Image 1 (cartoon, rainbow over the protein chains, first blue to last red):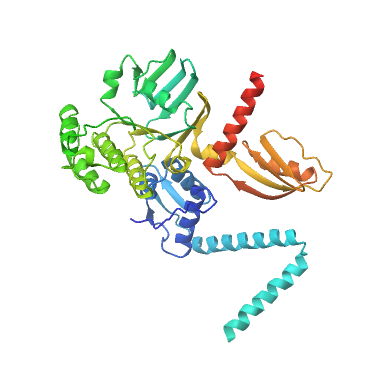
Image 2 (cartoon, rainbow over the protein chains, first blue to last red):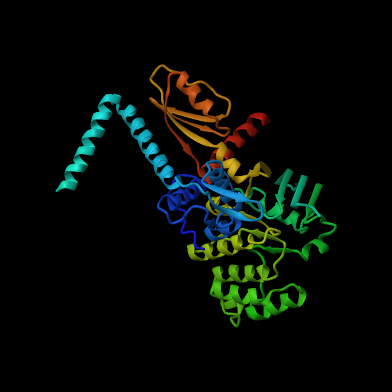
Length: 131
Length: 301
């Protein structure tokens, strides 16, 4: 099975984080469905041409977060969690919100102003869609 | 049986102008170890001791359970060694070399050799003298890989190769790892190759091992913190921070034992932490070598 994962050398994040993110995205968009078997650690390492230890680390973290389950001798699969795709989207939204908050702190923008800016941006998008 | 493919215990070798000091090294079976160091750091000497080509003055070397150099004949059946100064016979064809190796090593895998010929874009009937540098490197590797040795020892396998050839070789090396019983040790000064495919890394500088450990754990310990410090604030010296560079209101701190407590300690001192960045193996290597040389010179002085 082709994992479709692509490791980018210009991405500043460590390789294991890139693997985690791309697996989560595959699940979030529904390419990988609940309970579906995914490549073994060694298979994915050979496929991506990265070290076994890097893929192992990504899988351990995904397991800890409840995204995948690994059974001794039976390989790994996507967790049988009905709301997983939605939850991963929520997680991404949360990350974007936190990023926006950090940036506004840097610019000295108060939470109230950020709130109104968010409403404004949302109105702008809605207006564009009406056209 | 042992689950260590390679084990060095306080191995040393003294030359007139160079000393390899007290090398400790362990490569677990089933893993790839990348050996990184500047030119003249001792990488090749270490590899030659490992292969029994040079005898250490002191220390214990075990390769696939065999004591080196005394048991090197037994060990070498299972080791595939390739280095740049290995000579092929110029007047002979690659096919001649393949048949020659096959006559010595009964475990030669002819089907795999054919596959490698294709993947590496080599022609068996071509004479060695007509091959480019990249083709020679690939031919040497083919002769070693097709024996399917339990341990591959490769001295600078990707040096001087174009990006496509480098990629082809890295792909074959990672493919070897499909088999959990096999291990690889390779040296390189291309830190990107090492970062990508190694499970373990070892830094060597000036004849000493300055760090040797699990790559993921190692990368995880290092961070670069960008700080904004209002004038008049002295940034505290913190344990786990090996270098801090301050120009004007901005400072960059490098940590080799990062914990979130380091960031909060800076915040508590009145500075603001702008970003906490991961570092590439190359950045870590340079920082580590500089730090280790400073420390060593202080001790020596």
